[in-house]
Length: 506
Ligand SMILES: Cc1cc2nc3c(=O)[nH]c(=O)nc-3n(C[C@H](O)[C@H](O)[C@H](O)COP(=O)(O)OP(=O)(O)OC[C@H]3O[C@@H](n4cnc5c(N)ncnc54)[C@H](O)[C@@H]3O)c2cc1C
Image (cartoon, rainbow, N blue to C red; front, side, top):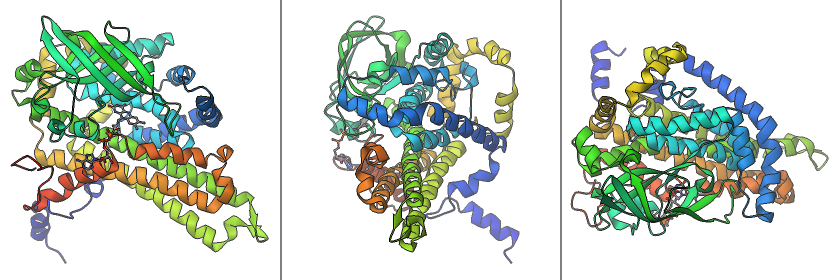
């Protein structure tokens, strides 16, 4: 028998390399209400899939081949009418305030029918998360008012997120790499704001979003210390949209080029710059930006994992349907043992992928961006307080004190162990989910033979769609390095990550 004192000493040793998964440690502390709420959301999304996603998935993929300029306004209108663009916006901003980890389950569900359409709906939350993790509550509150208004009047108001530049993709994914990239998006300080010049590429939903959160640099020679976050509205003078990519998959979701040509952004659209950092946190620009990106990426990478799991599940469902209807050597394919092994392998991949995003979301709930919202009393308080209460609170969001308090709590006080845990776990999920998506498409094709290659069977499209998941939100190679940096290197004092040209390494 293990004695109590021994249990205590084991617990005190945390964290050690290879310790308990965060899920095992944290899951019992989650409020039970989250499960019920998440099941209701999944049921709602299943209905949305039946009525909107499935009937459109293949026809729209074909349409985008015939008309590469196609933009998904009809889909956006439907998602807006179904209330999906405010579903995961916290109640204090006026949204429906569903628990944030439930977004991953919704993404999986939608992506099981079409990952391109799932992105048309969900990449808006990448834009929203980049607002939220700036902790500039006044600017965030103002933009969310437009999103709410858009839902009320039937004209969707979406938020895009733009960081990638023609010469800097992977390099802008980590503050320790940004000085290596060739960033060109320049911000010049002028009276009352910034003038922006430069270009961003591969911006999901750029052409159809009303607002775009973006990053620029006040000094192109030292970007890590000069990065600022701003937001621009469509139609602003000096802001224009270039081409959108004719890409391999997820064709229904445009990836846009955006161009800044002497574009003036007023101070009330600046989310983070050196002045706000000084005023609200007193930390270095590099440190604040690093924490901002960690929180943002930790939530969005769990979402990309869920997309991969959705693809993996969709491929499994197609394979099962095929195996249940097709006879080989006088009996149904589903009754051949080799086919059963293959289908079992695909099922296993879905479950493992799902566990990976649950693990990332638990890390975010335990030590990251969802920490407060998932605490039992706060969760129930937010769930059951009437709307009028949140309306009363809204003016508080515009006060400097609120931005100061949120910045201090999240950008100032977060420890590096927390950052390592959330970023490492979310990179693990991102790599696992996106690789398993591809793997299941290949297995489905193995099972289905020539039928799997036909467009009308849907697996061919899923394979094209899922390849993109391995690239965005940081390539999988880069995310493996981030996993190493967050979850392995801290336990091995000899390990150095991104230390090329830097003395300090990690
Ligand atoms: C469909 C799609 C949608 C996208 N949507 C958005 C969006 O909404 N907003 C946005 O800002 N961006 C978006 N992106 C951009 C995306 O984030 C980048 O494509 C991604 O970060 C990779 O950058 P890159 O393509 O420039 O590759 P590069 O950075 O040029 O990398 C090329 C290769 O080198 C490897 N590599 C480079 N550096 C390292 C390193 N240090 N360690 C290990 N390997 C390395 C990479 O893994 C990759 O294999 C999107 C991309 C796609 C494909």
